[in-house]
Image (cartoon, rainbow, N blue to C red):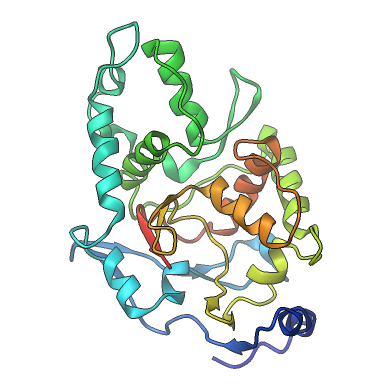
Length: 289
């Protein structure tokens, strides 16, 4: 792939990299790798950018394509994928009775396979609540309103296990978030956050994931920042990382005060970033460095 000379902010990021003692280099996504999980489920990792990204992105590339061979291989086999230990815990929790009502998730929703497509549409506007909700909020609403169980913390192990188990049900399904109607103001808010520079480094999401994807800064290979594989297992953390947990880390990397996981700002950002991946599919239990 030819060097994308239109990326005018590469020089600005390079200056910041020099300041931090880093040297950027070009390392584009793998040209022909195909994501086939368990030899059965083919998941698209490339796509054409939606029309509303005209002038920003033309082609979409899953973060999986930016990883090393060994990391990509882990995600292709559930026996090797370290996220599956947590996924199994979520599958077990689905059938476990909790709370004062003597119910489990399965009591109302039956087999977890009935949740196919749910993760692909998240976050979405909840008409009853009159607000944009992430998957975590739907889980907690079921727990507190139907099961009489305690709410789970956003980034707790139990919550991440459940969101993983639900994400697996949408593997290979196209991202289908709604950005029109009552969702539009949230999408516009998320877009504004995406392009706003934060912190002492004065960097936005777009500086890395739009202007400089395919570049390397030290050992960090910049992807397009899609969230279709989340929650993911991060080898660096030896654990599962949620979407908002990653947002927190990115903002902190700019040396800024961050929004909280589950905040209105991060839910709006989640919707916008999810919409940037329309054309890709849910990977479920991704593995990242």
